[in-house]
Length: 487
Image (cartoon, rainbow, N blue to C red; front, side):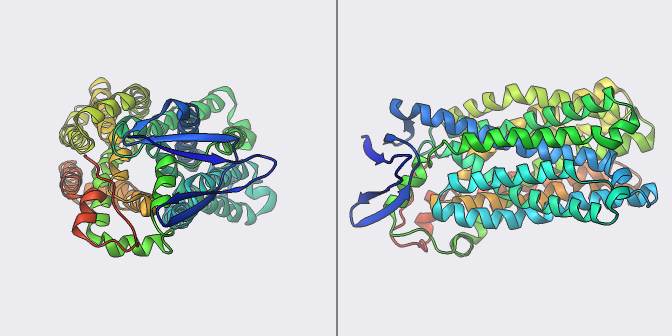
């Protein structure tokens, strides 16, 4: 049965429009003309399709730029920043200092997740996402405009760190909000695999765009020009693109599921993070573990492998870079396909299939890499990251969204995602390097990756949907009733 909710506002005269459900009342602002939304469990009405398409575009736009910024900074940190911002240091110290600024972003992300999640769960996803995207644009463009160390001295690395902190704070709330802008276009879990896979396309698209932009300036400019101004072009271009993204997001309305949920409860949760950890402490920890295996496998294949093949003289590092690009290109095709499959067989089942594939991939990867054949190495990497990894990545966003109720979902998804990123991918290259240094063999690295994948398989199998959790525990929010979801 369809439920009709009508919101009436004018751009020239913003009005507060109440939504009445029983004795509950929730008021929100909208900056659109007249919007009639038909909400049916698990479906989207014809009248709201234009609004949904705009929301999905804004979601994909933001997630793509998030991964574009992430990859671009990593490339510049390895190739440019030691020379531009730390010229007085030895090559080793300069590289470490550069990567330290990279790590600062990881530390800032969970903080950004808490801040964005808190307000996103209280006042809505749309408004917060405008701020996160604007913050990304200011930080990314700012990095491209920072003078070199030779021009302003110590202030150059100080400004770089400041921009990186702002970037990390903004990115911390971007992924969770982008996903919710997509998956909350429908209540229940119908189409959640496909809808959730669309913002996940931002990963392969961001990899392709960042590497492509950096390759263009690197191949077409002499080294002096590249170090002087060429490296700045992709960063400034990112800021210009984000301006368009902010304009696009300003035109979207709040997600239907969030509006419906706010109409069904007495008031927004005052402290979403505290309420979440009190109501679902074990579930939250399990949600973090769901991603660890994928992150460890990804960083083994795309980051650590470059150092491994170079130190051992197995092949040129370009083979690893080629495999990363091929995997990303394949991911653009496979991510929505795996999202559609997830809607047919179930989000949890598709996620587990991806993790089993990752286990097979990481078990075979280093033995095949040790053969020293670039073609075999590329094929192994493409299977691990381009096929198995995307089979996990495509349904992961939709699956994670079923774990937390709408009133704490932004906080739960963002904080879980960013913390697991540190525990999984953030330390993976360092752990692998330590294992290799101690044992002198890749066998220990393979075991480490397999243990991480096994942890994720256990966590995905045990974590409960918020509907199940609500039946087991008393909600901390008055009037909170979970929507039954089948995963």
